[in-house]
Image (tube, rainbow, N blue to C red; front, side):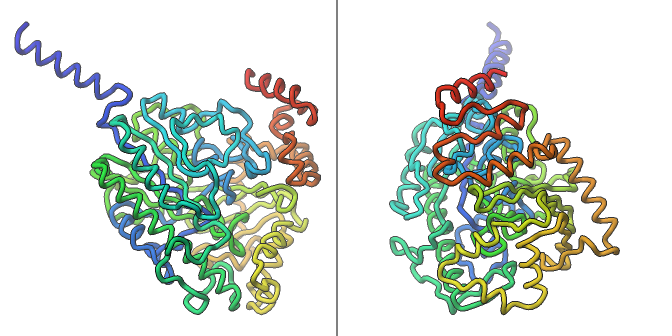
Amino acid sequence: MSSFRHLLLVLASLTLALALPGATTRPNILFIVSEDNGPELGCYGDPYARTPNLDRFAQEGVRFTRAYVTQAGCSQSRSSILTGLYPHQNGQLGLATWGFRMYREDTPNLPRSLKAAGYRTGLIGKLHVNPESAFPFDSWEIHSANFARKGLADYAKHAEAFIKASDQPFFLSVNYPDAHQPWLRQVDGMPARPHDGKDVKPMPYMGVDAPDLRKEVADYYNCMNRLDTLVGDLLAVLQRSGKADNTLVVYLGDHGADMLRGKRTSYEGGVLIPLLVRWPGQAKAGQVRADLVSTVDLMPTVLAVAGAAPPTGLAGQSFVPLLRGEKTDWRRYLFTEFHTHGGRNNYYPQRTVCNDRYKLIENLLPGEVNPGYEFTNNGHLEANVVAAIAAAPPNVRAAYELMRQPPRWELYDLQAGPYEFRDLATDPEHANTLAELQRELARWRAETADPLLKPENLARLTKEFSGASKQEARALSWGYPYYFFGQEPPAKNAPEVESQGRKKRKNK
């Protein structure tokens, strides 16, 4: 064999090896997901946040200032992160702990797609999407939500073991319990110097202030400080492994803080999140980008980075060009939604669209009292929320009353009023903007086959949600995964019939 021919064969073999699943030159992927927090980080300009590790991480990567979840609820948001679909597309309309689930177990998702592409897949912390069997992670440690914050050092220990286990490229998602309620002031000596109420003020989007609220907010920031320490430990593990330079690291919150006008709403306090991405040698470090980015973009982005073919029908698009600082024709409109968090206590379906300046919320049950309003107020056990709202300025009080019993449309100028205290939907000067966003929202709902476009589905879902307690929801199956698609759900008290019905649906 000539030396030239031998060289060609060697080069061909190397090319094939690099294309094969498991090739070590492909980047590893690390997701770091926190609970119930918006962009309350130092790198986003928050005056009370003590987050040096995440601030440094942001300088090393790309910081997105307009990143949104699809729905401000834990299971619903995480379902979109893992499937690249909106909740109304995948079926996870409410919390997994209330028995809500995706329509189909065979819905394409990140661990399944990456495993097929030769990646090891790992999960540390809660999954919180049903059915769990749809997500074939190779390794899963710490299955619980761990709101008691037990064994926090174990997250980094499990991550280190997983990262070092093989040279095969990996996808690892590490899901921390902070800053979910209860807001614990200090755990295992973290933070070393806790905030108290005199050190902070409530988030501006709340529009209210009171000493008892400040105490809660202080402990929220203590959770964020503790989270930052744990993230620092995890990043140190990655650095010691020698794999940091070949790892795409994504940090994000699963939705906004559990504060007034935050979690369980379609306002910015609920759907706007921190999103930081570091990709050594590929992403242009130090960028601060205001592009409209959604968590449905994460799956196509990760699959593009991994060299894996995306499944058809994904709702988002890869933002790899944004990471690299390339000029690209990015989206003009971004969409979010809401259904419920648990069940009847906060069911209030909404659809939302925003552009670079304005935001439109469509309330699908206009004029009805939103039960989520009282539910959120009652969740602040140590604060007199009613008194705080009563003491707020008139525009803030009006915004809370509108939140309690919304009209069909709410329109906000996010540049002039980023905290959404002035509804412009009936302002003649904004009629053209209103019409534009109404048109785009209707287009998106049609393109994504929103089941609630059908009045009979909305009416039936509303009836179903109004009669289900948490205990009933856990024991029985929701009917919407069937009647949304023209099928009658099986008898709820006949598990064997239900199983057959799910199997029949899966085969269609």
